[in-house]
Image 1 (tube, rainbow, N blue to C red):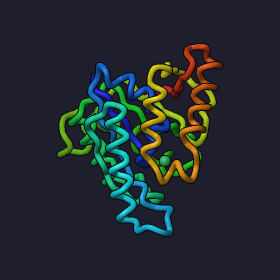
Image 2 (tube, rainbow, N blue to C red):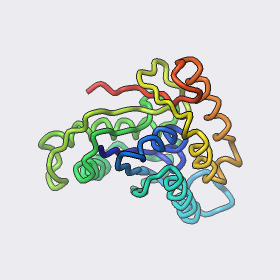
Image 3 (cartoon, protein in one colour):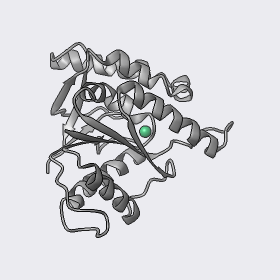
Image 4 (tube, rainbow, N blue to C red):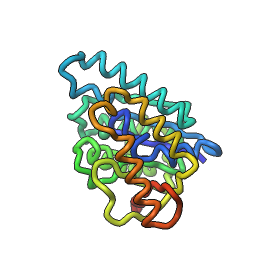
Length: 215
Ligand SMILES: [Zn+2]
């Protein structure tokens, strides 16, 4: 099966669903689409330089998880827009990559770029299946959309993935984002969240959980 993962910022895919990605790469073809390159938030380093650094970290992190294809849309970090240009880009990627499964952030996440990513992906999945946006390829029907948690834990998770065998790979993939994990220990925080999900669900030592988007 083909799988398309959408990440608002370079580190989100590893944090939100890195274990699931590593589980899936054994048998499936996965690509990650980064909506922004995470260039904001440093006073010491220029945005251009930081974007290049984060993209390199994203590629390294994706390779650890077993993903070969990475796509960077380079929207401005912190100012992601729900607009026709982004819908056109995402619909054309969906129609080209033909994913059965799409994975994106949880729509109620507290970070606005994350919420805008969900909105863009939901609408693009819908538009990709119909006659809309001419010039972006032939209609393609995505079978399932799963939403991962980053800043805001999902209230009623509907899908759990046992990541006990890939948790160490996931932590290694998160640690690729050196500047990020220096400020906040995402690797430790997410390992605890995944442990919590595993214990509460009783489905594995470490689990990632998802909301299932109703079509
Ligand atoms: Zn993010």
